[in-house]
Image (tube, rainbow, N blue to C red; front, side):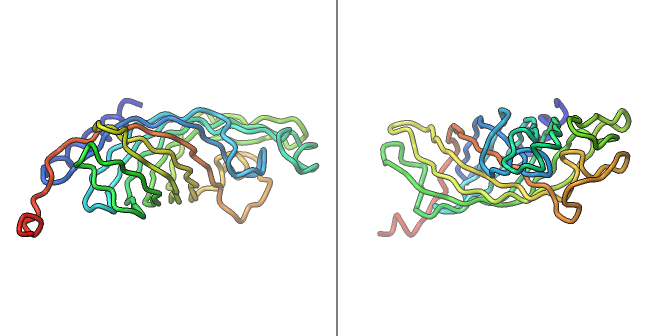
Length: 236
């Protein structure tokens, strides 16, 4: 975990070398759930906590660059499903995840963070790319009631994901703190988050579609940095 945190800090320092932008840094907390071949078929149904760090650079009043790192588990079991076939099968899995990502965030309303006494509120969307590490899971028995097994070596696998995020954010009035809440659906480039298409074990489920997972979270950020001079504003 430390090497991922170190990489995030180095990237943050590189981004903040230009002081003409306004920056945010903070913490993320929420929940995660998979959308895969095992478990419930609900899209937003957090089953395990998610924690992380987030950094943003506000380029314009409606556009920001964004980077974050999160640690969480993806867990589910078939007894929570609403389909009889999954309930009878009764499989389960748990995968330890860490993700690092970067992308862009677009605000639907002007969101100038420089005036701490101006009430701000806006919905926003976000997308980009995430790199994540996960456990290598597999099934060697497809009889009912099985749990995914963890591969011994190599223990970890890696892949990429594209986030599709919608959220709301506002300022804590009279301060430099911002708060937000969002729901983000991750499309991954793997079909083995749950162990259903492992190179070692037996395959099952829909083999032609990739797995997804959801992050439902809130965050608190602190704003800092110098405002870029706009000579046209002074000329008015």
